[in-house]
Image 1 (cartoon, one colour):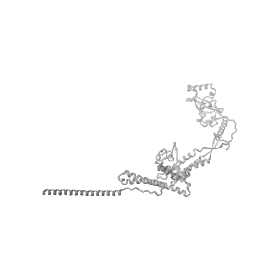
Image 2 (tube, one colour):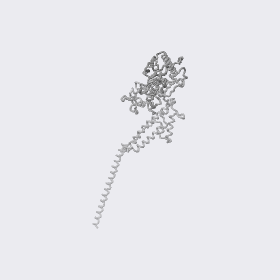
Image 3 (spheres, helix red, strand yellow):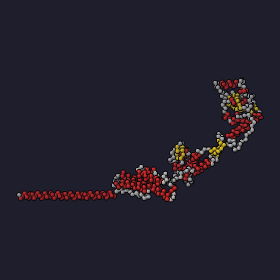
Image 4 (tube, one colour):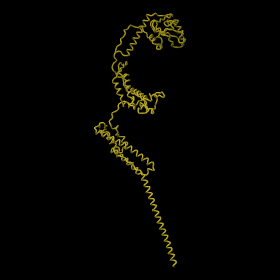
Length: 493
């Protein structure tokens, strides 16, 4: 029994030692766990501190100098941006999309702030004008209020109702200076020049068809006006225009070329620009790279080319300015018209010629050296000038005066034989002169047959080509036996 007690005591002690070892193990585990938690917390704290150093904070934007309506809208946009940045403050370092959006929002807000402050400054300026008793410079709306106030209220209404976005409201109801200030409409300065010429017409034109005299703008007037325009369009030696109105024409005038409206500068390069390199004029359909040579502020500015452009544009403007200015009836033509004067002078010249020729015919000695029966008067220089060549060997005049004569029949047979079945006979006209009665006759020849010649009355020719024979022959053909008439006296106007 005593032995059993010792065994039991040994077992208890052994068991207690196991329990103690287990407790020690548990305690060590707890200690290790606590140490691990401490390490984790330290690491978390360390990471937290590191994040704080890299944390992104949103920018602040000032609402100073901004109209209350614009400030309220702008603050809303800023709040949206700041909320986005705060919610994603720890993610910008690793997320490029978030970073890109943040940068874009900041850029948009900066531009918007500048725009709204500028608009607010305009609104303050308009109010200052009213305080300074200069409100008459401001345009009025339909209801009689100032247009800038009316449009501002419309912007507010449109945004609050949700009918428009903020940008749409600003565009639909503008408050910029050009929109709400009264503006004197620009007037082309050349209009006054053309109007002055129209009011003071210095030219006269007689229309013989309707018998009226018309006032017209003379060529000298047009030249003076066109020169004035050209000089005003020309860039001066200091590199600018003396008159800003003509600078505007120089820079912005539009012309219609070939049915298309283009700038005057483009039209110049298309029609009139002389290229010194190629020695060609015009033909340039794309002048984009050449426009600088017409710009006085450009380093490529070329004064001679600019002068040529000013001259070209002045001509185009003048053509356009005068084209609709019709003639202005002044009154009935008085006295002798220009047509009547021309007719009278021609008649008098013909009569004088008739009289002179008649005197020569009656006083000079006729010649008929070849016994042709045809009398040519050599005393008149017009009749002696190469018009009697070949007469000595020609057929007698009786060949045409007596168609049944042997000579006339022989000539006709030769002519018919040469032209066979022709219903009309074609001849070469060798010369034209006057017979003893002062009537024109033609010396004709069968084509290619120099031995077949005869005289016929000029009136027998079906095709009269005296226009090709010179004025002397015309005078001979037009000769008429004069009848005594009293010379008319021109009527002075």
